[in-house]
Length: 378
Image (cartoon, rainbow, N blue to C red; front, side):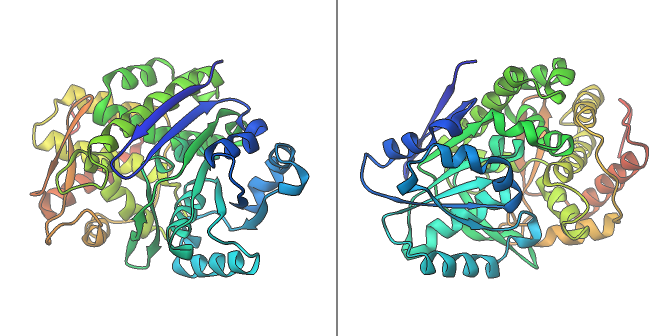
């Protein structure tokens, strides 16, 4: 299986996203190339669980004298907070990190987001590299430069755009991923197909069994196609201008984030919440007649095919209320992404609370049966 490279060129940064197998074996030489052979001190931010699985392979790629300093940070959304950033900054300072240091984010989306934010603010900015270890992080959060932390009021409300020097997507890292996390990551790929790629959507429809079994060659194709969708969108709208195409990447995320908040970030993985949020968005699209009943069923059933999505306790009232702090809100107007077909979406600013409540109620009804029908109406 050959390695694939996607180049992302932006006004503020330019970097490669490399997708292949056994990339950890050549990690140190790759970092040397990224720094043009100049001296650098590697600091690797990871979770104890990930380090236990992959430490030998990582260390084996470095000369003994240049082995990275490892700093641990627990995985999980509840640890993606300001207090954690301050703790990490103190640890970097205690270990003597300076402007010649290079941070390595080695973990899932939380590790990637918090390391990117740390790199943006420590000594007013030091370089970092993304090595995502979950499928969700590989196809989504590691690409595009969004970094940050959560507040009690909402998710990702504080952060910065800070692009890595490179993203290394090692397919082998998925071999130790629990099936639930693999399926959760695939929800972001389904989302990518819904918003911009009928070809990816068809591949996901045809390859359910192989993809869920973790076939490396099939996964590489899905990952590359998903990253290509995001790279194409980000390349024309780096910082998510109001109503711009980058906002479409948030399809399913308005209610998805509300579900995460309603359940205390403990019940569902991010991709699972996005799956339910996407079904909610499809209900709004169906009610507005921007998609047909057949298109609704096709898209919703593909989301469920990469389940099962776990049930959760929340009311439509709760979910609508929690969307008030959504970071896509502009001048008091809620931005919402609706589907206009398989592979196309649009951003609207006129979704009322009543519409959202009806769609959330319909999504909760779907959750109770875990099925949707072609005639399902909100």
